[in-house]
Length: 115
Image 1: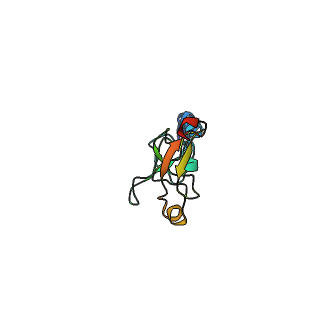
Image 2: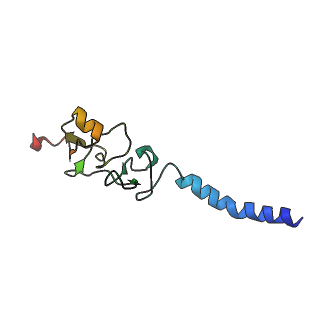
Image 3: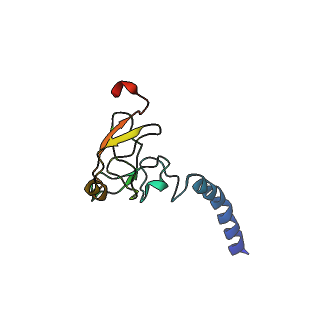
């Protein structure tokens, strides 16, 4: 009887915590600064690492005139892709794509003064 009462109490205490985890997510829908393995896990869409030995964390996308990476299949970036509506003007090469080092600058394709 005491065991079932403890189990019921534990379930009641864990229910709010479980609903909070589903809302934010342990594996997806991660906030800026949280550890990640793939960009699809992050709300921002960018799982970023400083170098090959650092842990990857969710980071904000690059703003206009910031250094960026074109979207890649790898899912972890050294420079984040651009915010929505901007393009990453980068020289895409096979070597750059493989080594994830084909960086560019975010620009607004609708800005005719830059052409």
